[in-house]
Length: 86
Image (cartoon, rainbow, N blue to C red; front, top):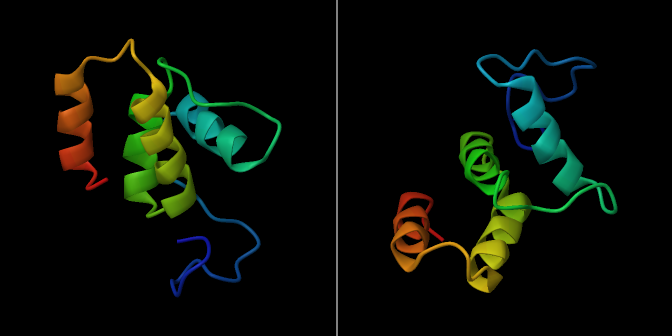
């Protein structure tokens, strides 16, 4: 939507519908270095949004977060890995 061949490419402003403002802000904060990192509270909606907008790098960051985080149970990790094909 933002970088590929789409109707939105080249527009100065793009309306993003059906997204919770705070969740989209979390996504933007992990895209820009130094702003924020993925946490146990943010990774579920960040993964959902990266899938929706087909953003590979933030999804890779979520994948690394899941690999390193021992507080998230293995069943959840397996479910998310399968759901988001990571």
